[in-house]
Image 1 (tube, rainbow, N blue to C red):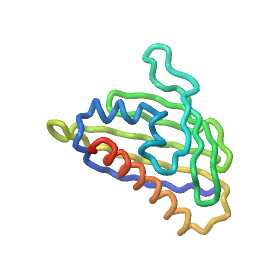
Image 2: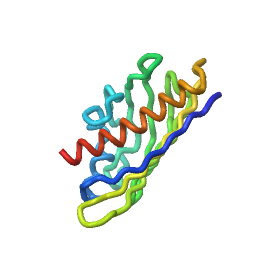
Image 3: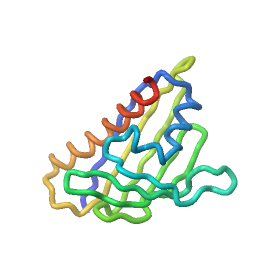
Image 4: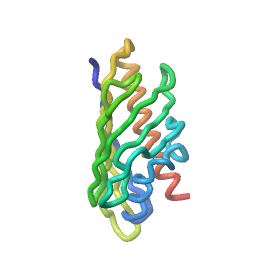
Length: 145
């Protein structure tokens, strides 16, 4: 099963608390991540009210994918892994946030996807790199507009 991963770091002109609230608002992802078509929180953590599991429908080069992710939250970001998926066999990701100065946040985004797609490695790498770039670029534009 091939695994492809990519990461990107970007500085966003927004306070850390604002960036953190935005990435935790999973149902808003279709607004700022072009590939995400639908997002629905299925469960929240009782103690914090933060998303515990969510279902997504996303556009992919080979078609539309549907998957469920589970989340762990930290003061400086969040991590996730895949519970179930159609095209993907696994997914892990994380956002790590660091205060970069007054009203500015550094966002490090990492994503790994496991799949059984019969695509050349070069095409798979281009797809995941594009997804990571679109995600951080979309987040930056959304928060800075």
